[in-house]
Length: 332
Image (cartoon, rainbow, N blue to C red; front, side, top):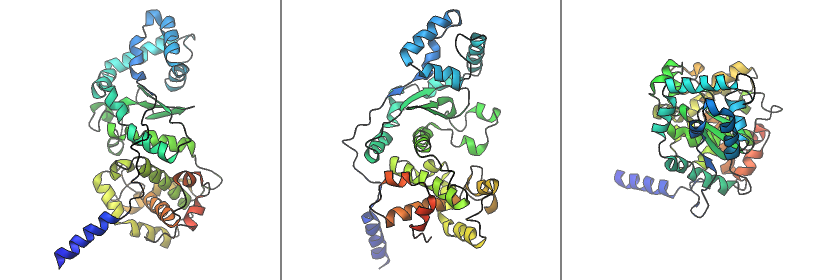
């Protein structure tokens, strides 16, 4: 009898509809991918002005964005530009940054392919939207992603592996380093796209429940765009952290409700429940970071289940997160 019940359970699970299981086989995964991290190989101090003109010819306005906005070196014709550029290149060479990036990402075809399934799913859900051009760069351990008009630049030196020796020396914490792996590149790309296209509306995002749902919606978006990526990776969790937040979802929600925390507006208090970190402080050092966001995600998931005519695009366009909450019928 037990064997029968177990087999029945497996059968029922296999029959459960996965809302993210969509057919993208005939959708193009092509997009503009530019490995700009090789560009500095062509720039020599003794021929800086001609080399910079060639970069502008090859890469358009992005070269200005890279040198002026990302590296903040100023205009190539400004005083001190050559010295600043030399200093940056010397720093990267002395710390083997260029060498390690090229070694880790030696196959640019494979690197581009990491994004193709996400591109296919993005086009499936957002057929009228353009996929941004993706530039890979070295930024000197600054931000992981730099968005600008129709472009997202990704700093490859931020994805060299959680055990990369320089990270600890640069002050990156353990919880930051666990996400500094190349498998996070598609997650960070599409999360950046969502953040830019669907920014938080400050008119409504003033309390904890709104922040939970906004961040939870980002996770729902990532589930749809990267359905074959591990849950823990999409959340930036370890496997244990993901299991923890799944197990204690109801307890987390009950604490938030019982202590009347859902509508707090203090930014620092909100961050305790939704921000990144080694854990969620109010729930102890064994908890998952930002664990209230998981309840926000489940609210969004419940909303979509109970409103099947709402598309992902329509979901992402909702400004007031309370509209999602009030129509979700969430019950952990």
